[in-house]
Length: 268
Ligand SMILES: C[S@@+](CC[C@H](N)C(=O)[O-])C[C@H]1O[C@@H](n2cnc3c(N)ncnc32)[C@H](O)[C@@H]1O
Image 1: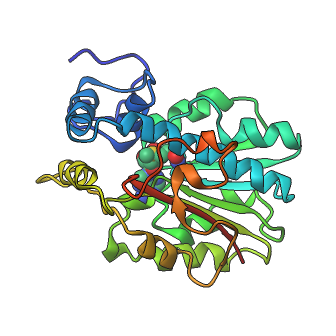
Image 2 (image 1 turned 120 degrees about the horizontal axis):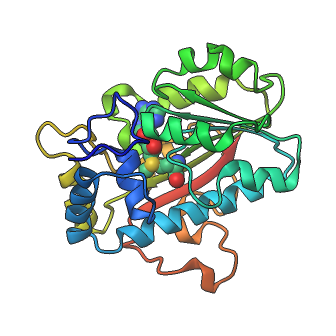
Image 3 (image 1 turned 180 degrees about the vertical axis):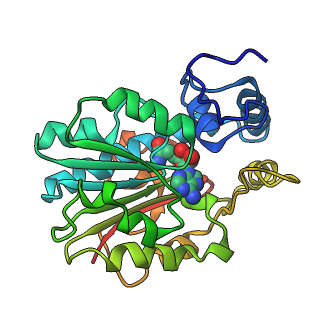
């Protein structure tokens, strides 16, 4: 397999990565043959997966816009992914030129491409880290020099917690982040689900095949609600992703009791 000149040396081209597979669903160009083959298998059982990824990005944009309108101007985007159209820093920059965004990802392609895109942008920083190590992330000078922990901020966990297994205790991870932040801070979650959707369960099985580098744990609406802990959910609570404050009634899209994902926003 030819190695593209943009591929960081440490990347193993033979094994798909969550970040690059998602880039492929979104029509991006930072993916390899192994990612495309893997994604095509998922699309074989869940043909709407590409549209689901687009709906997830649309939710990200709507929720960030909502937060900007409530006055939030600092964003900690955990599992930020490979940059694509409508990135968080673009949305928040259009509300407040002084807003701050910290992108955190553990995927070398996501980190490298984010750094390239953001070179010279003082409002936005990129950190290579494992979000499942909140104490380490919160103590990192890259975070402390960029975000003001004495002022409210939003923590974004968008389409990433289904890659955090139960034994890593995702609810405790989230609580550690939120407990470190002042009142008025917000949490955004979108999460894959197989509730009422056997095809989504089939997609999860592909991610969980033997020796998978990307195991997946889809969660039900009740389980996603639990992840918010004692935070206060804003209307409409935890709902199927397209129905979280759609831009228009028609914009809600093909949501149904089968839609393979839930989302919500809460504050503490
Ligand atoms: C499906 S993508 C979502 C990207 C973006 N949040 C969005 O919604 O468009 C998931 C991202 O989370 C990252 N990720 C998964 N587990 C992670 C972890 N433990 N620490 C940091 N990043 C992680 C992946 O590398 C990938 O870039």
